[in-house]
Amino acid sequence: MRQVVLDTETTGLDPRQGHRIIEIGCVELLNRRLTGNTFHVYINPERLVEVEAIGVHGITNEYLADKPVFTTIAKDFIEFIRGAQLVIHNAPFDVGFMDTEFAKLSGLQSSKTEEMCSILDTLGMARQIHPGQKNNLDALCKRYGIDNSHREKHGALLDAEILADVYLLMTGGQTDLNLSGKNSGEGGAQLENIRRLSTQRKPLKVVLATADELDEHERRLDLVANKGGSCIWRQ
Figure 1 (cartoon, rainbow, N blue to C red):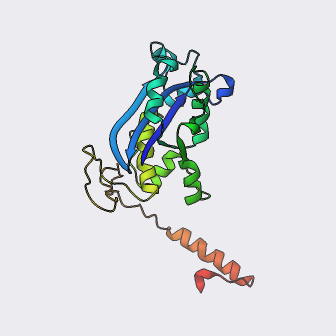
Figure 2: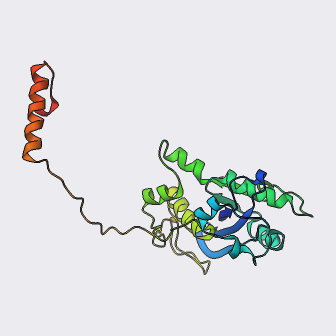
Figure 3: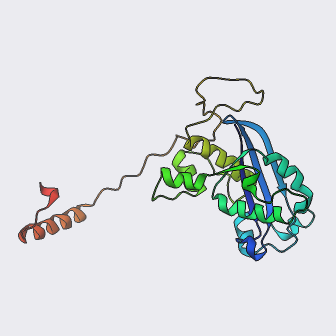
């Protein structure tokens, strides 16, 4: 199975308001192995990036001024993802932008991403596995012990790399980084290439109650007992 873990950065939140993609980052998985193949490009959106968006990803209008427009990179991008399963966190967001960009191109048989690739939404998967919990990328990194300390701002390629680690752990582990294409073990559960948090953590600080606090606690328990209540601390 060929999978492409994908992330985008954009000028704003809604392509229906004219917002566009400014960065695409992809990493390739083949049979759940990171191959080392990536696709990464910055794009001139031919419009201004919103200030709020710059605060998220740090990509400025000045930086994008000399970058290629989407039509220039579209062919290479489509060739990289076509036929793969796309692994995306909050897929409707990225796919909505991709479909909007594809619709602007001429000569495509279809402008729909889902007709070029299958799509796996890791946010929906995480919500099923961890209902009622935070399931953004930072929360999942913390939950699975993945080191994302180098992620000061959002970036498409960095986020795709981190998401690949999260996805592989969330779905049962990965095999090793295999650039040669040779098998390097059976069972597909070698996790040494995933960036993990250090286990050398300082012990938690223990704060004990003071004598005055203990006396006040006992007085409160006496009050509860005098009113006929039952105190679990005295059972």
